[in-house]
Length: 126
Image 1 (cartoon, rainbow, N blue to C red):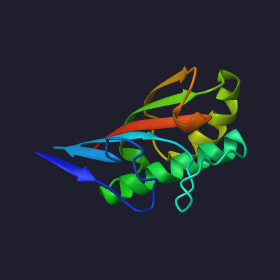
Image 2: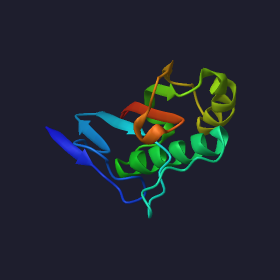
Image 3: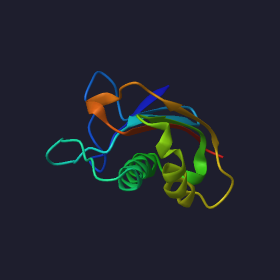
Image 4: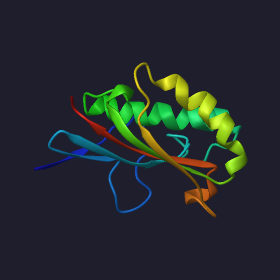
């Protein structure tokens, strides 16, 4: 059975999708960008700050599903510029207290709303 996961502590979808879907013991979190929750405008400050915002939003979605960052088994990071890889890693790594999840990092020609970073994750109840 499929359960829709949504929270007001992360950006609402900007298209025909949900923040996350839970199927059994797996939660699939949609790609998340650094959008201001009130204005719905993209936040473009620094890649480190944008990464923190995105990871915080992902944490809010996971919390709504009664999960944490330690439940993430796979992450996909999309960057507008692969030169930001090191800066993203500095922030991203601080969100995990146990083992890191599997991960792919991809440079994309263009992200939604011209974001610098988008992250999606898959999580599993242990």
